[in-house]
Length: 215
Image 1: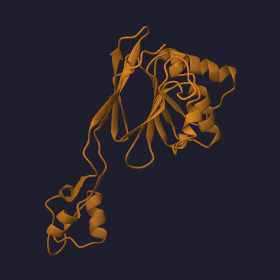
Image 2: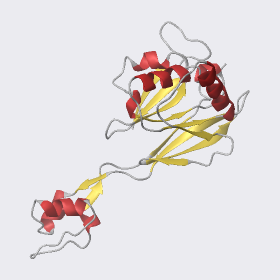
Image 3: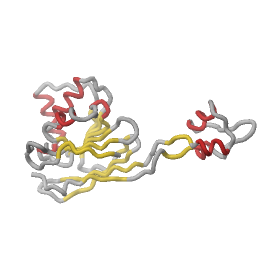
Image 4: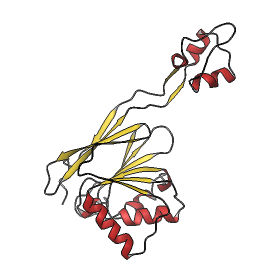
């Protein structure tokens, strides 16, 4: 997973730094996660190869505006650029209520489902290969850090193991990848999983907002 800082300024933006937003980019495919969404986050995204269509989840650490005022604009742009798949939003209940009021008062229609998880009582959620949970922090308002743990790493075939089992290239290799049989008349793998390996080692990472005290 790669980290891309879209904004690191606290409270107000500066000429060189936008307010809080951090993209976590999967190292396989185009999927990514957003932690906090300060004002003008979508402008920062225009300077990156990231697309709102590939956004897996948005996590908001707390209610202060420099961490969430960019949400309505980002969601509206995602809708206008064709996003249709559901989007996960993990945030304080107050952020959900504010966003719902904003959508109603500005006639913001989203053609995709916004799947909301309130941080109050949040115990974790699985998104693709990742498990996301949260930890309470010390701040002037309730605030949380998010932890991303990679627990379901994508796999690929192990050519050396297949060669050792005398499995010829072709449809049988596809069977191994699909967890079916790797058997031939000459040989048979002990198990299809023995011919696969993770694409890279797993790991975990968490985001804490205590490094720069928000306003």
